[in-house]
Length: 615
Image (cartoon, rainbow, N blue to C red; front, side):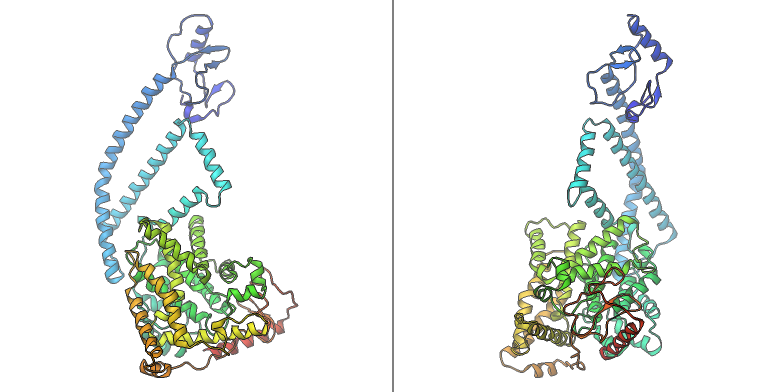
């Protein structure tokens, strides 16, 4: 009997799971009588345990030469295993080589027209290869199991793994699980869908029909380019839910619905709620989130195209972009900390807004019929969630230097691995942060629109700081404004340009298009600084036309407290938004107040009025 594999799990009077055979019992009786043993037993024991100790059978004590028998048995087993493995690998080698050639051809097709076509023979080849890879993987697991049983240090290693799991912040098992979930494989091939098809389906689902569908389709033809301007959708009043529209098109363009079997209904409900959860700030609103989502889409399609990003990473990046500012209060983290805002107290002054964005997004995602990650297996769900949280937290501008240092170390030490999932995540974190501050790298008209909006929000915060009797941030003081051209050039040269240059230091990254536009915008502002022309003359020369006024205060809210009927988000009255927290009401509320249906209806009416004002 193979006692080694049984692991001392026998019944009384047995070794392992097998009782002593009659022949062995007779052998024990001869030993008791002093007669020489007829033969040496072939019973095996787990090596390394009770070394040098005799085996005790009943009242007999017999010394058995286990070592020679075990060595002969293991040598024979290794020889058989090697023979079988060589035979199997020879049969599998042709399948693997053919599969690699097929995948290379499919990758070239996807890069040329975003569509890859398989015939019946090629599908059969992929199925056969995957089956053989599964067999190989199972064989490796069997080998590891055998080694674990025959290794005298196996028990120490198991104890070590348990200690690492229980007493470290990033246990090895969790890291390996995350890498496996995000690394991708032949069975995790991303299916691409043509942009036109993605646009058509998405427009229909967000109820853009008739003439609006044709106009929106024309605008969305530029979705894959850096020239796309999401505010054109707002100006032409083509949609009231830009996050739902843009994110849906992007998810379909990358084939993520098909890859993961995502529910279109759940995604539609979730994204509609995300749209509504954004407050009506001049800058940090749903249009900004849709703009960042499109920018991340461009990065995935063009800037990071040379990297083989896993579909899990792509899904996490797109969703993180859509929710990265959800519920933004229109003020900075420094304002929340300086005024002891409940969010700052809740998150211990550590990225209160970004932590709230991530928490609110997953609270929305946990609501009934909005669990968009449910089709993924539990390991993949955890991996996508971790990646999303990491990317959202990276949008805190206070983490700018840390992000740059992280990538700089990888580049300077030549340790960046284009196939490493953790390194991919570092790039995606910096990419989302870069897109978030990339308005100055957009074409002039779109860039100037966002500049006007962010200044409106900055000045509103400056007014709130003055009212709260705390120091007014210099760039937010409307009474002592910094010249626009100098403020913009300083921000570009100090933040945006170094970030793009750092990304450009990675061989697999191509940021030439946004870098060229960024330099063009810097040169334009330099003409104003040099006195060659005024800001107004520059705007006229570059065909910039100001939007209709967006001076609705960043801190203005509904006149009475209420709750959004669709999302359950708590909204606060005017003058309190700078003090009261924005949280999901079905979890808890910062300010306990009595709610009434009338208050909810009035709040809803105020929101509708703001929607009309904001377009």
